[in-house]
Length: 318
Image 1 (cartoon, one colour):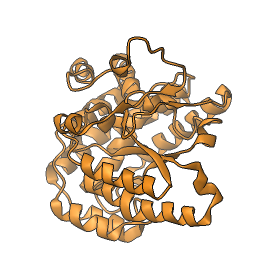
Image 2: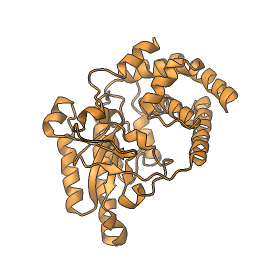
Image 3: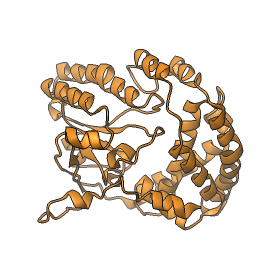
């Protein structure tokens, strides 16, 4: 069964970043090359919110607070489903850090523009944007987000970014091991960490998203840097215990995830501005939307494998 899933990772809708580079281009190590998205490309790839993103970018650029918006993850390689988060990185204009006025403008832009768009795209989103700037990428710590996460991405400007990585493999592997241990521990106690308000679509998505992070943490803790998709592929090929079975069911749920209610799509942006998520009221609102098919699949087909797989991974590898 997992072979079918691996094949899906390389379906015709995905594309290789290498194919977008000119023939004469030589990719530099730790440099990302976002594809320059156009309105026509966006239409073909069902990026229905592209016009809103461009307006958001133009506003931020006119305010002098941002230089680019980079989309990565599933929306970055066009393998998105109804399950997908909007993974977006804001390349900040460094002049913001020397001006209190610009800091306030950036904060207002994030709260009243960016966060609203994120929730419009994914009403079940459980995290906000990532932020980059020149000084950060010139002395970059991959504990923030490994550069391989940008392996396939697109942006409004299409400008490349060169990262100068802080080389400390020991610290990186130790941090990955810590995150692996913590995430496995949380997954082993889902009632406490994910389902305090029951199994809603929002809480189920958080739970499944954490399951899908395990392979990346697992390999990074061994010094192997892989993005989430490639880590899942390798993990399934190696058939690492019961957790592989949990990943297969999680992937099936991801592919057939139901469309989110338009009510939540309308209400949540009205409630959220400061951060995603924003307090108990936001979580309670998100938890109101439940579907029995999702709940039963998570409870009966995912949890048993996660319990066994998490304990197995912790006993064998940690």
